[in-house]
Image (cartoon, rainbow, N blue to C red; front, top):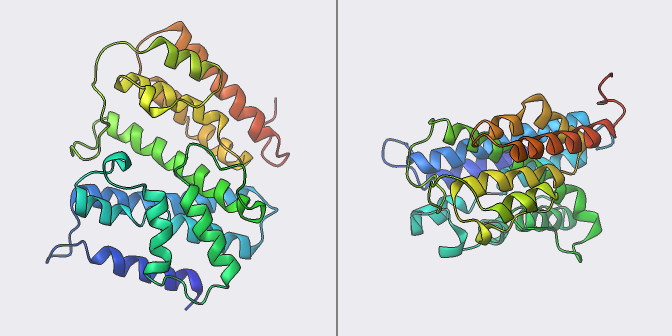
Length: 266
C-alpha cells in the first residue's frame, strides 16, 4: 500500500469517529468530507497542468489536500459551527492533528514538516513573510485548490443546493453592498472578513481571490469553469460589478498565459 493510500485510510478512520451507528455523517460534515475530496481532485488537476512538479512533489501536495481540513470534524462536533473565531483556527488545529493522530509516520521528517506547515497556513489571510521557502510550493498549492473548491461550494450554496444552517455565513442577507468593499476588490486587494457587513460584501470579496491564485493551471481551471462569472450572476446589476468581473478575468488570463502550454490562441 503506497503512502497516500495509507494516509487516506487513516483519514477515513478518523472521519468514521463522527459517523452515527448507520455510518452516516451529519449533513454539514458530509459536505466537508466531499470538500476534502474535491480539494484532492483539484490539486491533481493543477499538478497535471504544471509540468515542473515531480512525483514526490505531487505526493506532498496530495497529502496537504487530504489533511488541510481534518480538524473540521472535531470543530463541528464540539462547537456546531465552522466559524473559527468562535471555536479554533482550523488551519492550526489541522496541522496539530497530523502529529496528534500520528498520520503518515513513514513520511520523512522534512516532508512531514512541509505538509504540517502548508496545512497550517492554508486558511490564513496571507502566507507569512518568514514561511520556509522550501515549503512554499506546497502552501501555494493547497491554498489554490482550497479556494477553487470553496468557490464551487459557494456557487452551489447560493444556487440552493445546500440549505443546512451550519453551512452559512454569519452575515445578514440584505440588499446592496458596502461601497468600500467593492473598491477594495476593484483594486485587487483581499477583503478582510471583519469589514464585511452583508452577504453581497462576501461575494464581492471573492473576486480578490483572482489576485491570490499562484499557479497558471489554477487560473485556467477558474476560467474554464467560469467560477467568477457564476459568482457575478449571484450579485445585483451594476456596471462596477461588471468591471470587477472583467478585471478578475484579465488577471486570471494573464496568469494562465504565463504558462506557454496553457496559453490560449488569440
